[in-house]
Length: 279
Image (cartoon, rainbow, N blue to C red; front, side):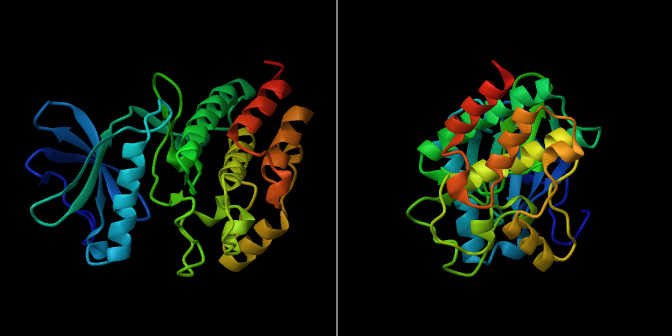
């Protein structure tokens, strides 16, 4: 056990999923590589942290993530296998295990080429478009939530900060869920009328970082970070990376501080990328 709030490797959940390796720590839970004793397969298991087990709002968010994944069936989205509760009361999600690196791990080696970004844009625009058609917003796009498989196209993971249009009011509890450096200004400032353009913005930020190797906004003080994002105070991508003018304009529009100036949806952004790339 690496921490008193984490679960020990070697633990078997529901008599079936043996936790064999740490994979990642998320906002709500820890992710493990696990061995499925029933069918012998390798799976990923996300376990709600012990400190949140008694918090009904966190349990509800965790169940929401499972419900969202269950509703989605798309090659660019991680596939849910089970949402369960162990005999000891541990709440967990089981998903397919994707061999590969996160985009964050890949970017530690340097920025993507434009050609590599082609596959990223196609996969994420298609996957997020499917998410939005179900009335769901991802709400936490960032390189750590994109897996780049050893084979195949990039995949979206971690829907723990997702929102359901018409049901969630981000200002209802004063809570902002997600990662601030990648959030749209209207989310950070607590506006209730959010839509799919928060994910258009998030993908714009991811593309900025993927092509330049650096996030557009960096500030250790959360208040100053929020002010920079709200003001759109970052260097244009073509100042920090060697990208074609058309791609620089696309990233700038996707990241516009005012949502009405962004692309309307993922199909619009994907179409613009293909036009910029003459594909």
